[in-house]
Length: 223
Image (cartoon, rainbow, N blue to C red):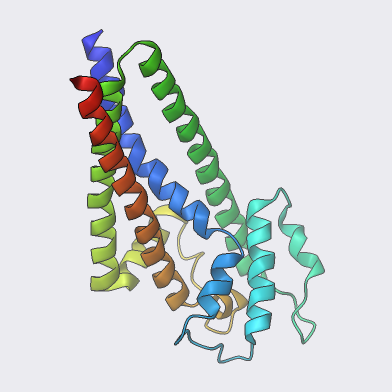
């Protein structure tokens, strides 16, 4: 029984950083983030002619696709101002891959959330909330360490971090595009660098809540 309890606590500590990071990504995956980002002072304009309104329109379309149940033909109805397709075949292939990754990630996020709630309920029923809250606290502090390492990577070499991320989650060079492609015009490197930073900010806030709240309650229930 003690062995099973130890395994459960270890799994909790491991799952909390993933849950927090996925929560932060979910917060950023909405049309409000591009609106905020495009209005950030110093955000690079599109050298090929997209206005801010164009970027907001096409970014919103792209995010809607990632979050709904449409297949890739969803983009057939959208054209650029010159009548050309919004995305070329290579971009469409990447958007399909991104959708699969995002939706699997959010499915995992939901499952983790349910498991965390179940773990809390079972701990409450068994009058074993002290170790549960201690695991929450340790998971929160572990998240802070992970986020710190990610932010160091952003500062030291964001290009390297960005490249490694894509090599892990995508096949070959399917994520590489020309600067004139719509995806790069909508989402230049600055967009993603800022997204990583904001993900770190949101995750750090959650991690502190887990760390402090978990520690306070662990002390109360372990007395």
